[in-house]
Image (tube, rainbow, N blue to C red):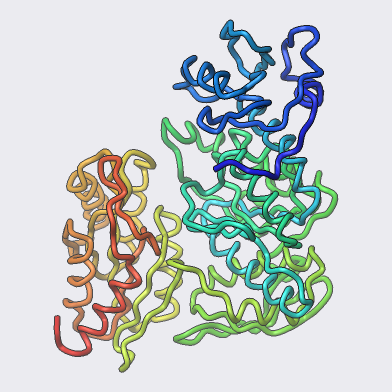
Length: 508
């Protein structure tokens, strides 16, 4: 989609930005006065006075030629393609892409308070919690509602829709920030994925607050992060452009994170267990349908009611509250915002009328997330059977099959293994790999039901005593990714709600 929010600059303005970053290698003499009114990396969007960015391992010269035919007057590239318009030759096209996009939209993050969360799990939940707090603050002050971007959906004040990436590519990201500015939003809350940070999608964005929520082994594969060290260092890149850093002191790697985060202008810590952290909770009480706690921040002490009974979401709530405190939000808005927060597909709770079955839909899709989910639910419902339905994605994160199988084998009573976005692989082979990991834990109460809808029905139908039935991996997704096609899929929440009603009515 094209945009009318880009600024007009001479080409020399872009060359100055690239030169200051140290990646500009050369530019033809006399090209600096060219007028640039639009920049893009999509040849289909090119128009007169466009600066075109040649990016991607699969880039073809034909794309550049097409952009020039549509009006592009200069291009940025790691390769000189010997065409009749000036080339801004750079040493790092990914950095150039972020900087050009930020420049084209007039550095919009300087005109709005952008808050970002990174971490292995909980990013989306934290965004929704902070968004709910900021929405309550906006309601109380008469301001515009906050903009937000997650891996599930986005609303930038002008456009809203389903997200394709956890963190968008640079031109999309900067457009959404610019939209939020044009809509009068005071705040924008987003996820910053390790891939986005590693490949400089967020380069140029000023983060008013950046939070590191937790860390565990995930996304280690040839197409993501080759090593755990690469994954960790990528996440730490968030703090290169933050005014205030927020860090979870409960992480095993907290010391290393704090060493890097301390370079930011301000630093806030939070913890579930350490009452010396800047933000912490006391008087935590858990019930079947939620938990309550007293929250302590540097500026206030107040009570919250969180509509989920698992303590890891209290950690996410503390992360959001720490960010809100850094933004100067009033405690009344924090408490009301947390109470009203809903996170699609994240710890969504469903109940039969008689309370015999608690249904949980969550997005946990790696071993650490599943282990945390199951152990928290075990602590909350110690006398109930824990039945879990899950699979693992194909084409990436291959280690999840083993780690999720191990977690389920150790902490669940009954297991139904099923498909979860098999992508380019065979779902049955993925399920077999998970089953092997489950069996290695000495667990024998498992079965494979490839059809996910039938797997959910099976998990509920075979319940014989008060139980918690957990369906995890896809959250609120309305598609199933098979062989490169996003096929329609009824979200887990909708399915589980209907199956629970059928169970209670004796229709299963």
